[in-house]
Length: 433
Ligand code: URA
Image 1 (cartoon, rainbow, N blue to C red):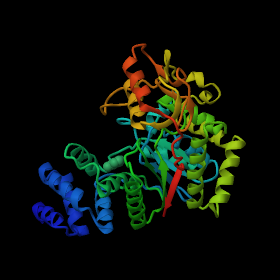
Image 2 (cartoon, rainbow, N blue to C red; image 1 turned 180 degrees about the vertical axis):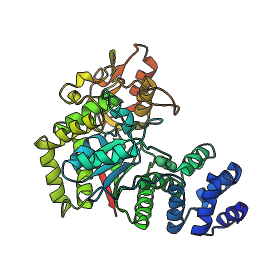
Image 3 (spheres, rainbow, N blue to C red; image 1 turned 180 degrees about the horizontal axis):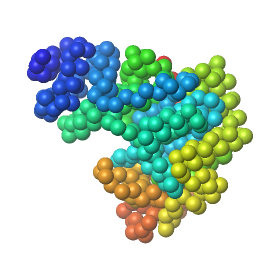
Image 4 (cartoon, rainbow, N blue to C red; image 1 turned 60 degrees about the vertical axis):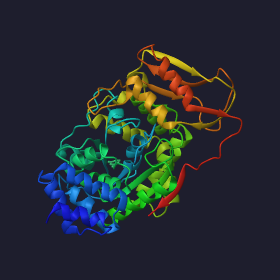
């Protein structure tokens, strides 16, 4: 086979076979195909797309370029959740203990934040002592013992995707649904889970800005899962404003604890319960979403989910007393109010800009090896549709320096204040199976 023939085939709108895609990924991983040829192929996919069969073959080829976990010795249907990334998205943190305490094993392999979005692993590391770097054996033992673990990938997961993603980043080929779906699935399937719930974010703080794109990505993710024999469902959920009221690592842990005490913000609560219900049904613990939601609400009310979070923290070496005293989480030195410059109603929030503001305070990474300040972030006092009077505090910055004028302005400018409430977008817009 010759790479030039595969590039030409895709350029001419023809579908590649499993054999061709597998060969291409193997050769690229072995560095026998140069980056310039892979770049040309990626651009051809960007313009001409892939058939559903090609998408699956492409994802599986990248999956098998690295290590794949075998969780078959853990009894039960193992279920994981994947979010395509948003601002203030801390859902995995209350979700894993909630689902685990209801009898479904949740083996979560999570990521770190990059750019305007945060990462579950960084958030968990704001709990003193919490270790996300468990070995495969520890990970499996922990899931067997307490039904839950949240760790970073050990070993080499989908190395072909890592190199192709870096190439896409510099060749204008990131925004391609088959390439995004293949990239996500090559990593997600490596965790050896039996079922997956996808939270596909849509809106100005998400990768997918329109419902059409989000729906297409959701269908691609569900389609690849089906071919892999993994049960799945995808929810399209709103990211036209941050989730909840906090952005920043330790602030989001405190908010997650509030959710587990059944008193956090409604949007975070509702999305946690909705995703938990899907996971419980896929995990065979409830016959309907209605029954599953009831089980989840009960476990939040009676403290079982909170207790499961304490178990998770202890099992991973962390200090579980943060649950009773959130002052034990890293605290920023300064609280700086960002005030409204005019009166009216919040009718638009530039969610991306708020994520970037948290990053610029030191809470997120501009580059992969940046060191984070886990204490800093934003607490939002106003969300979409809220009336404001000039001088009201829109956001409190938690900062470790007083020199934050530029970030304050960025946050103020991220709020658009108009004269009428915006049209309400539902938190859960669609469910795709
Ligand atoms: N997340 C991924 O893992 N890959 C993409 O291509 C986009 C988002």
